Amino acid sequence: MFELIAVASITLLAVISPGADFAMVTRNSLLHGRQAGLLAAAGIAAGVQLHVLYSMLGVAVLIQQSPEWFSAIKVCGALYLMYAGYQTWSSATLRARGERFVAHELGRWKALSAGFFTNALNPKTTLFVLSVYSQVIERNTPVAVQIGYGLFMSATHAVWFSVVAVFFSESTLRQRMLQHQKTLNRFIGIALGGLGMTLALS
Image (cartoon, rainbow, N blue to C red):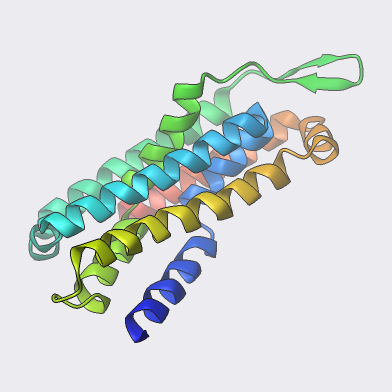
């Protein structure tokens, strides 16, 4: 019971703390609409499963014992966030149609992969999953239970970021934000790029 409570508590705290995943879902939802935001949330959930998979396979031990591996993940994640920030900063302004602003369509794969790579290359999630599987979950915990914990982590990420996507893609809020889209693009671009630089220098 203690193990379950610990996993659930750590997961909830890790999910709701602001970071790169939150920034990416917000970006997709505001600039490209609800579907793009929800797909990013699904991509994040899939990214969590990647971390769970290598933790269960024992690759986590290699990452823990080799600072070079963790540094490589951190640098890749930082570069990806800075690239996403640059893209957002330099993206074209949406066109107004009547009194409403219309975004260009973001392909499903691009929306999904944005969430996946943001999470898969996120050192915060790496440390979160590693700590759960190496410090909280016991070695004698059945594999089925460990898989269940991993699915819970993914489901929690999917639900939380779906809520974020729905909130930021709400029609009235989104239209008001997009009236200042140039400023919005630059703000989100700076936020993503800043997160990337923070990861690179930390």
